[in-house]
Length: 125
Image (cartoon, rainbow, N blue to C red; front, top):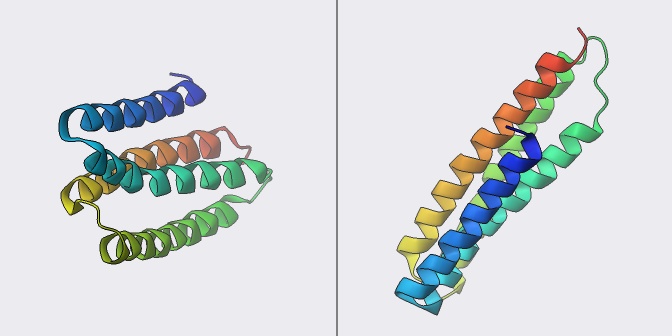
């Protein structure tokens, strides 16, 4: 499957899921689902953009590994802060927010890891 198509499918599933929650459970739950998914999606897209902006060169495997590790740590801090902000400052249902956050984080993180692996195996050694 083409990488852009896979990302578009993940994004479409997120929008469809948010819409379905809005139809079934109402606006507050849909906003919670949207709030839970928007940060994992944004951080993954930004990470992929930065990763692919780096030019592969000989011996760059260590540079990519360091990038991936720092990227993951930054994502953990951002998602932790976002979760604290949403749970403490907003009056959104926690269940849909946490479920959406976990599903989107894992789905987009797996997508990101597959894209990294494709890039690293295609890079000259």
